[in-house]
Amino acid sequence: MPGLVSVKSPPDSAPLQVSVPDAQRSEPVNSKPPSPLPKKLPSPSSSRSKFSPRKPPPETPTLDLNPNSDSALENPDLGPFLLKLARDAIASGEGPTRALDYALRASQSFERCAPADGEPSLDLAMSLHVLAAIYCSLGRFEEAVPVLERAIRVPDPPRGADHALAAFSGFMQLGDTYSMLGQVDKSIVSYEEGLKIQIEALGESDPRVGETCRYLSEAHVQAMEFDRAEELCKKTLEIHHVHSEPASLAEAADRRLMALICEAKGDYETALEHLVLASMAMIANGQDTEVAAIDVSIGSIYMSLCRYDEALFSYQKALTVFKSSKGENHPSVASVFAHLADLYHRTGKLRDSKSYCENALKIYAKPVPGATAEDIAGGLTEISAIYESVDEPEEALKLLQKAMKMLEDKPGQQSTIAGIEARMGVMFYMVGSYEEARNSFESAIAKLRACGERKSAFFGVVLNQMGLASVQLFKIDEAAELFEEARGILEQECGPFHQDTIGVYGNLAATYDAMGRVNDAIEILEYVLKLREEKLGIANPDFEEEKKRLAELLKEAGRTRDRKAKSLENLIDPNSKKTKKEVMKKWPSLGFRI
Image (cartoon, rainbow, N blue to C red; front, side):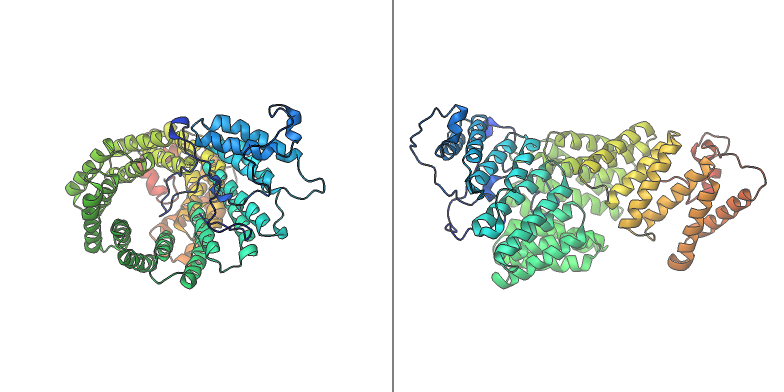
């Protein structure tokens, strides 16, 4: 993780560490949830608190007062002494609970002994960082947040490098804590503030600034903010180009991240270029396992480009290396099996595809020691997508439910669980379990709102899907609200010409028509037709149907008597008097669809 080294402290001085024995805690301080990135999502750690206190803690302080009394907190020697006890308690295996008590009292002592002239106390800032790290080691992330918010207010960066380091460390640790709570938006805000302080202290071209830019770029990828992620990753590459040797490991890691960003933006050729350069750098450094991991990514890019023979070759290369270096039953092998299953499914070799799925599931069913729940859950999710594509939604549902269960108790997994719940909602919808579908979508939306992803395109798509489930349950007013919110988000994130946005327009027009709001439905249909005529072209087969439907609505709106609200059954119920075929003929693209 990037650091900002104080000019008053040796660069190689040992940083303050808070590590808790596994037997005494449920989650390690430095545990990190999974990520689609080459580097995992950040987690709270006190390792960024590398600045030294102004007064080193005495080994044997002379205390005039009982250290357990409140009045003793005013003794200036007590704070360093208690902080040392907190660190010793962890190192000796006493566990974080006792260390927490020491750290709490240490921070209280530093608070009371703060200089009378109001000078910021770096001792207090450090003790708060340690206290927050102990809270995180106990899984009490919510309690760590106010502690860190207090810590970042203590230093005054213009006073010098030590203060800048304290502020930088506080913002980065606060961002990590927010990420563990799944609050990605707040996490990014904290990281951005930390980066600003670091740039002011070190300059824009310092290698440590490059590390922070890369760290922040990964966070933006997690939030699906790919433009900002690309900007930061480019800056990282520029800095490493100046300070690192050609084909360095740092450059290879940067290029893997840039490839991920380019792939997410649909720029597959550029992504492939970055991956090839990263692979060459790893080969030069003798990193065979990393080369195999890059080969898997290269195979996925070839798949996106429909270059299936080259994709197959890349996957087979990776599979050979993983089997020889990690063993036949390692999750990395299962992951390649899942990619091969997808490849064979796309090329129509369904028997081979199913065979590879089964082989992967056998490995995930009996994982080797050291396999993480996050890796297994990710693999199960990938295989479920294949079962979904071959019209086996029940099997896909089982895998998704198993994956979600494995992640339920893991911190920082709210966004991942929300994505799984959204997929489950689609599966429930496909099998006609509309109540379960709506509940899954509702739960996913609640998590995405809490994570700060309420403005992402994915959030808009999930809103649209929940609206469709609500329609099937005849909750038409709720559906209209969901479609309206989805429209606003997708217009902002994707633009009005995107297919997802146009799909929401159609669903909203159908809903308004069902509610008797003919004029609103007409307004939307006129807008959609105008988009097609002026921007998208009229060759789309939906154009004529949309035009025909608009003519019908205009004719109905011109009647002298009020038009009765159209029954929902006539729009969506396959058992209504009008058959499903007749309904779809009337609403081929403007009817409700998922």
